[in-house]
Image (cartoon, rainbow, N blue to C red; front, side, top):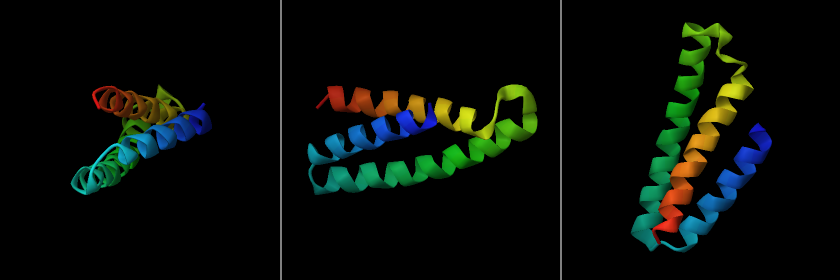
Length: 78
């Protein structure tokens, strides 16, 4: 599940980036870098606070799928 979500996320990210000008690509790249920091912190938090929430890979998949939806929405608006 994680691998599939990550592959889809990367494909949508690349497609979205191609539709943006240089400033937009920089903002997208910055946003993605910050999202990766958030994602990793959120996995650590959820694993600590609620150990029954699933494995780290399950949490990563959930967060990646949520980010994928965000980027798909952004792409649909272009």
